[in-house]
Image 1 (cartoon, rainbow, N blue to C red):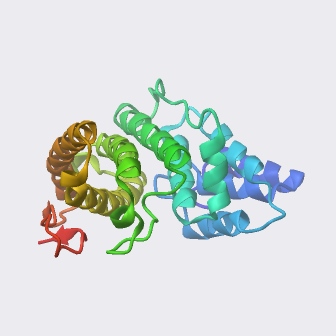
Image 2: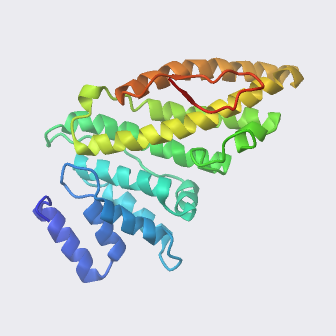
Length: 275
């Protein structure tokens, strides 16, 4: 409790009195302490998503309400907690989040009072846009592109032409929102933004793997496409090459080896290639 503010302690006590275990866990995961959410609180919330007697709408609403805080720390940690649950929680949480008309409305968020408030508020706005896009991708594609089966018999390698041309732009939009986070290594100055960046890093690798496999499949089908499909496919491929440059810049921040496009040959396994 030593790292928690008086406000955090009072809020946790109030939730204890009202008997809301979920609200208490969300409160404890999103304290004013300048560090990522504690694992034990995230693990408990993940457990809650797997319990049939737990209300997923209540959990989601509790997270949304927490973003009403004026503190960049609390709001940033709420986004991290939500992202963590989208990645590791039961899929019914993702299904519910994707069904909402709005998720996060933080385009105007600005913490003027706290140290690092201005800088961190910029990343909060970008991060919230990515999570909104991640939810939208799930709604449009009816799948989490970071979790789909990969490989020669995976979803993107076996998808038909018509669906590929509809699906790849959805992945592109999600990847664009992720890459717009755009931190420099000297901006990763605290445990909160570092935790967010690592979750984004994991999503970027998995999302690119699906994207890459889809593009390889599209190129293999190119000469069998109709004229209008060829035109769309060419634009998708041009966009893909541009995203490769942006992705390599993003990964350099994490000091990850340069990521290159897997050779688009029939013998390629479609996996991400790390040098």
